[in-house]
Length: 514
Image 1 (tube, rainbow, N blue to C red):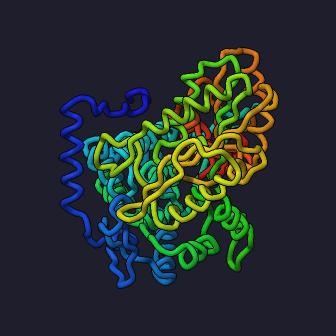
Image 2: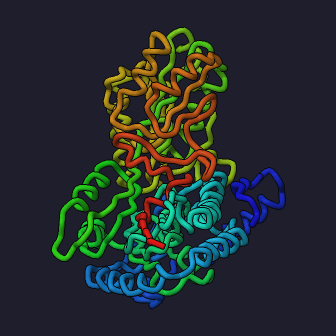
Image 3: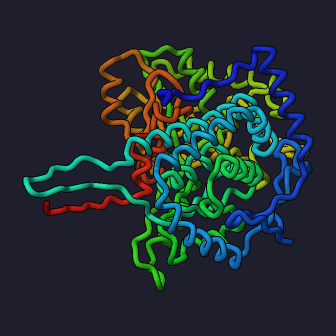
């Protein structure tokens, strides 16, 4: 077994890589607009009702039309998953891991194609799309190895005349509800974590990015995953999502998305339904309001660069994005001015053009919400960059910076999920940490300082699941920076970490008298 190392990112300054991506974009263009069925027990099922996926940079361009599951088809998928679980749970964990390793190899060979599809379907610039695909590969490679590590359980003590074992067994049927912002990486990671641990899955991908999820299911099939182990059931959250969350045969829900939907799922999952004989487990990652703190003893250029890249990478549509910065007053003006300069230098346009740093937001609803927040921001702070938007062709919002924002302002407190950053001033480092913690979220944060004692103070007092020193607050790597947050950011489930798989299993103790 080759030791785990994360998938390297593609260097697009190399002509061969650049041309390979252009070829991949052309390939994806060739199959845009196709119809995609549901997949239930390996059976392709076409419905009249469709979810239409559009290119957010060219909002009239259809990426694909995906059959939409009804409650009846969701029930069929549930029965198939229930039946398949009886055999899949008994498959040797090493064989289940082999499916993941094979899938990783297939995706690696088609890496640029998947990334190009993300560029078209999710509006991801080349580097962002490439990182998404790399992370999907990482999840497959890492979780496969983690399963091999824990497949024999954990050591426990035995006494003379007694043999004790501590084994992990799968939970049952899992509902995976994946997001649109990492429509490949998070969708793939949450799905295969459930599969490799011996569970069966009903996958309900985000309605804005269902095509890449379909392509992934095809990869799993090619890699040898038995029919029915994963079932592809895109559909309405209100109709299909609620039905599956409520279902008495659902054993766990793995959800990535907004705070409000996550809380709603958690509440519904806690309700006992007739025929249900367990407490449903919820694995949830629900967003953030992430802060970069800049100390007076800091590399100020690094600080400004970190804020801009963390705020505006993928148009700020990351739960880890820097949506607030808190800067100590001694260096406040210098950093704010430099952030404004760097922001104004960013290139915005169609993500298919690699010269653009930033592209669109995902859809009209996101566009409307973010532009409303920009108007709120104009009343709550001083606009120093951006503040404009155009949805005539695609959903483009210029990267926007507000300075002199009160720590209690709405744009400092509420998750905007777009290219908007609010900056507040702190009198000293202690106050900066207080402001950073003054949010209901606790996902990521960063501290830029050369003061060792302040770094250690932040390590202890800055209450987030992923804290970064002297770098931006985005870009966690599977197996290196396990990802998950505190408070309203979710269940701190630490995706890509050494104890993530155990969330999909239960421990069983057996004791034999010899």
